[in-house]
Length: 474
Image 1 (tube, rainbow, N blue to C red):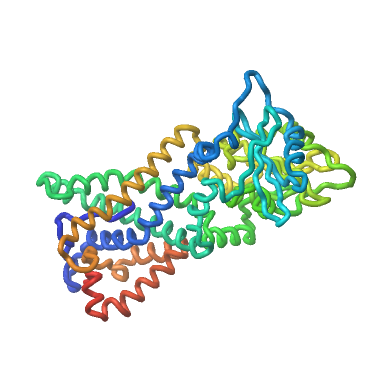
Image 2: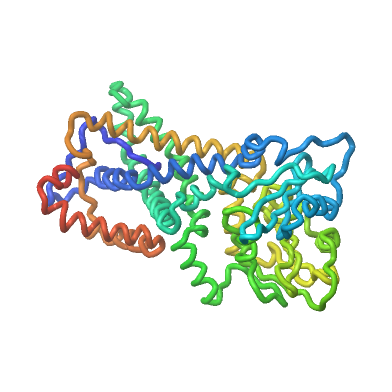
């Protein structure tokens, strides 16, 4: 469970005296669950709302920009060659260069990412059946891009990223303590329901919804940690320098894709995790560049499923990077079956594949993470995954709303924040201490925050009577 639970009565549980040998475990875990909720509820609420919006980004973006992102499909028509569509972009914007494109299926426009004179990019949408430009949009005009940035860092840069990571770390603690008080508090909840006490039905609903939601949170938080600034960067550094690379190898490659994707995909979203760390090849020779059609044909010959996300050569030694990716909602089969992910690097002069990097080249850990992220984004198992992820987001929103309501009812006329009154015998239980230390090492933001909380508790709260009363400290 992810938020504040309740005790067997409408008043805070009174813990035994410090001299008592019996530990009030229910009260102890409930207190930590309560304080964890103060940190987690705002973060989880934002993540649930923005995550659900991003889940349906294709539909929302299309509805916000009718006639631009989707087009009317003529009866029996087929999509024109990409080179013909590119000519429409060049004719409309002769002073721009194309840095990448996103092909699609059905009524989806082809997206050409163009570079402006100031170095920024703008997406140009082309009707693939008529080779006509339907419009152009920057990433700030796409609601999906705005929401993914909120989802990633609250639009607050590194500070926001750290807040997200802190909330995600405490969400794990909140879930663990929620499971414990779910089982420890079953009897009190049953008695409250039998007596028809005020708020008993909401407490029971919170507990029952929280049990499966907690399992989902553990999966989603752990699959989302690779994107965080501190945890993700540390794990990446350990993996890449410790002989256990997460990203496999690509013979003959000399640079990674991450920076190239960030500069050319026309959005503010981070690049695909394993794909972003994949290396690229190089073009050899000189002369005229082959057409985009030739580059795509080379990828098809290598067995990479279409439609593609294609990055154009960035310099004289650059390559066409033709990607069957799970990330961009183009209709590629790899969106749900990540084992089909492939990136084929094509020599810009000869049109031949010079390197290939795909799911089979990922390390086992990278394969697990890639599948986890696909589940996280509601794609791995098709519509079923989307439906379950949507229900999960709604359940999280319910938990975030029901928790403050339960606290307000329980608080009544009490002063302060009316936190559950109990001690967590951290130094009296060696197994508990080891568990907290291990979790603090694995989740650095959690570990640092616990140290801060303990210091404030011992040096300030317990020494200032007004604070002691406000926090209901034993």
